[in-house]
Every structure is written in C-alpha cells, then in structure tokens.
Image 1 (tube, helix red, strand yellow):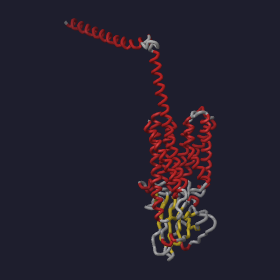
Image 2 (cartoon, helix red, strand yellow; image 1 turned 135 degrees about the vertical axis):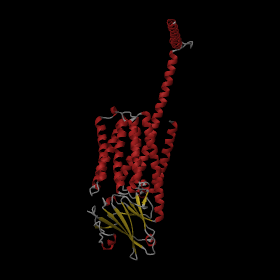
Image 3 (cartoon, one colour; image 1 turned 60 degrees about the horizontal axis):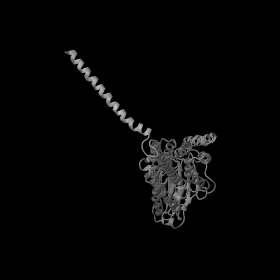
Image 4 (cartoon, one colour; image 1 turned 120 degrees about the horizontal axis):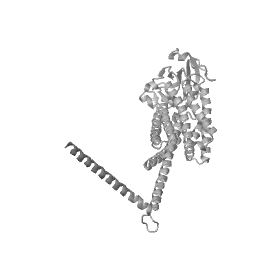
Length: 457
C-alpha cells in the first residue's frame, strides 16, 4: 500500500510538470500557422454529391455570409494563399476529423494545375495523424501555390470544421509532440483504471468501481478521438469514430456523476440534491445515444443545449460535494480537489475558443489532460485514505492486545490473576480431557474385540 502511494504521488508530480510544459508549449501555437475560419477566411460554394471534382473551376464562390443547406450535398471551401511558404509549396493542410462521407482537397498552382488528395469515412489511408487530425501535404512544384480548396460531402455542420495551414516541418514536429502527450495521458489513465478497479474489489467500495469505469471510458474516448485505434482498425476512420466519441463523452459524465454521488453517505446530503445530481448525470448519459446518431443541421444546436445540461450537472455535483464537505465528509473533500481542474477547463473552453490552439488538439486535448489529472488524484486520495484506515486499525489492534494483557495480570506483581490463570489452564484441561476421552474410547474398542473373539470361539 505504501509503495503504491509513493508511485501515485510520483505520477501526479510528473503529470503536473507535464501539464505545465504542455500549456506553455502549445497555447499560442506556432507563429507560422494560419487558422482557417469558415465565416471569415474561406469562400464557400455548394453542389450535388454527384458533381465531379473537376467542376471546381465552374463553381461560383461566395466570400460573404455563412453556408447553409449543404448536409445532403457537397460544401466547397476555398482559401487564397500568399507568402513565401506558398511560393515554395511548403504548405500542409491539417483538418480535424468530423462527420462527413468524403473530404477532397485541391491544391491550385499559378500555372493553372490542380492536384487532388482525398479521404473517405472508413478510409483515411496514410493521411491520419495522432490528435484527431487529417494531414494533406501540397505537392512540390516549380509554380507557386495560389489556393487550397476543401470539398466535404454530406458534412454534418460547418461549425465543426477546424483547419490550419502550416509548414511541413512544423506539421511533423506537432504530430510527434501530440503523439507523445496523448500516449502519456492514455498510459496514466490505464494505470488509474486498473488501480481503481483493484481497490474496488479489495475494499468493496461502489464508488471506486464507478471511478474505474469512468477512467476506462475516458481511456477509450481518448484512444478513439486521437485516432490511435486506426493503426489497428482503419475501417473506423471518420464518422463512426466521431459518433462513438460523442456517446463515450456523455457516458463518461454519467459515470463521473455516479462515482461522486455514491462516494458520499446518504445522510450527509439532502435527498433532493442527491436525486437532482443523479437525474442530470443520467440524462447526459442517455442523451449521448441519439446525439451520436444525428447527422443533420440540428446537431450544432443540440450540442449547445447538451453543453448547458453538462454545466448544470457540474454545478449540481459541486453543490453536492460542498454540502457533504461541510458535513465532515472526507470523500467530498477529495472529490472537490479532483474536480477543480476539470471544471476550470470546462469553464475555459466555454468562455474562450481554444479549438485551434494546442497544436490543433484544442479543447479535447485539455479535457484529456484534465481527466488524467482527476483520475490520478482520486486514486492517490483513495490510497492515502485507505493507508490512514490501516494505520488506525493497527493502532486499535495494539491497544486491544494491551488491554487484554492488562486484564489478565495483577498490576502490582505482574503475575497472572484469576482470569489469566483460568485462560492459561483451560487449554491444558481441554487437551487432557480429550486424551482421556480417546483413551476410554480405545479401551471400549478393545473390549468389544475381545468379546467378539470369545463369541466366535
């Protein structure tokens, strides 16, 4: 138990240092990166899905307003390029995965040539990168690069598009950094899941089982969002992955709420507050199933409504823990300390747009890091609390043994008193009585054998 506590403390220290370095390194992002905003930086056009990619030159792009009614067709987005990077062709387009059937990218050059690259739902080929992004490199040509056009077939919503144009060298560096950061977070979540599950079986506490389920759900969500699973199951690329991630995110909130509610005794919190927190948490979990299947234009509105419900659930859980803490619950104190960072992250991503920061990981990378912190903190808190309980148990056993010893000896002489004499003699009498009974049984058995031989004679 002590070794496990030291290990978790070491991991928490490493995680704090890693988070600080990650925030400082990734917040602003590289200066050479160009973020593409659909409503501000991109011109848009629409066509039917059956239209060929070669019809790009015949489309009429509009650079004002927002695209609409494109969910059953194709949405074309064009960005004009300038600068030395475009002249050298040192350009990489990184697009965050979303719900679409097909994404085709056209690199247009000053000599009129166009080079196409594409991915489909279920087949990203070699374009996927760790961190939930799809990478397209502009082919090197003598002519300057003038524009980049993205064609999305049956896109769920343009508000979910996050794209950046960066130099090729920086794209490689960012991909390697994201892979290292996400790999470390997933490893720590795996350790926390196994440890919490073993504690749940060892001490038979329900909230630790819910905590292990939450850690496992966040581990699976992080692996799917970051596209690590595509190395083994490439057919899950695209829409299927984003739908599963939506369901897992809602399920994780429900499991976290159940873990908090079951960790605190029923008598410490009013019943109405306990019921409200459970209803909100389970409501978020159930809402994940239909939300994961929606592909229409209402997805953005429903996602905003779900965000409000999630915030209400967090406020209810905070009130629940604060009430329990005032009533003297140690578990509530530990959970409040663990929930502090995730709640700050959720407040940050709802107030500040960070989707294009942190090397393109955005809010999802922050949530993954906060979830790792929360899982390790709760595991360390459970270990510390169980360690204290073990120390108290050992003290109680030693006190009980000392009291029993004092009750069996005379305080003046130190010799056994009547109780001590009886307890020490009783085993001897029991053993003698047993030997006498076995001897009597043996004599009766021999007497019966003699009688039987006499009768046969």
